[in-house]
Amino acid sequence: MPFSPFDPRRLEGRRPRFRLIPVRTLLPNLITLLALCAGLTAIRLAVEDKLEWAVAAIVFAALLDGIDGRVARMLKGTSRFGAELDSLADFVNFGVAPALMLYFWGLHELGNAGWIAAMVFAISTGLRLARFNVMADDPNKPAWAANFFVGVPAPAGAITVLLPIYVYFLGMPRVVFVAPVALVYTLTIAFLMVSRLPVLSGKRVGKRVAPEMVLPVFVAVVLFFALLISYPWVVLTIGTVCFLASLPLGYLSYRKHERKDAAAASVTPSAARPGAHDPPPSEVPPLSPGHSEHPADPGRPARLN
Image (cartoon, rainbow, N blue to C red; front, side, top):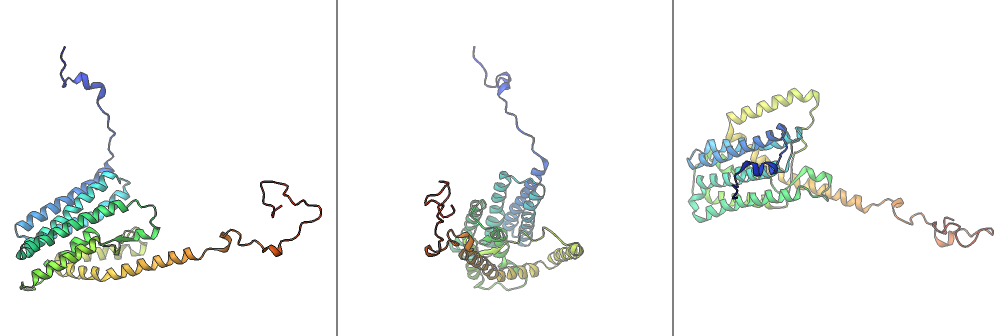
């Protein structure tokens, strides 16, 4: 008798049973998807020549990217799925979207060279994210290395690479050399993202706040967002310049930690070296007449017997 593959009785005993997913694991992923929507919207706004709103969408995506991981750790809702989703969203938000924004803004004036620069930046973002995922579970990494990124992180790279657009909206006139300068600048940021340059991460900043600093922190955060909304191009330009100026400080701090580790490894306590307290052969006391030359306990060295 022929059977139907859609017979529910045939699949009744094989129907898989999935575990219920806690809500705390869904919230970080929803924040990541919201950031992805902002990045895709930035691409649309750039195509429509609404660069002011496109930049605002990228900044909003960067703010959401900064809190989704913290929310996941606070709610104990981290997962491998969330990590992969975050990387894919970051590639779109901070790789593809800024590259297209720069191309539509001014790199298109250089023809193929401008498109190549935009592609290099987007590809560098993907390589940066792939390397971060591979190095995240490195067991040989020292504890202090968690304070540093390897290369400029993707959100910071996206905010930094848009500096020519910030300066343009500050009132700088569009002259002939702006597009070539933007091309060189874009390639430089792309190189910094895939480089091995140590960059201060700031991951451990803000985990604990002293009671007397709660109100000043609230005031500082409100003041920052008020300035960002009122004077966006000034705040973004100053922030980008300060970030670029801090890159040498991160490198020097990383090298300082490396020198400390090297000094600690070279200075080994004498007690940890085998035979450090053994007397020289001339100072070994002779055996007493009642003792044998061979040890009483074969498991112990002759010197201790």
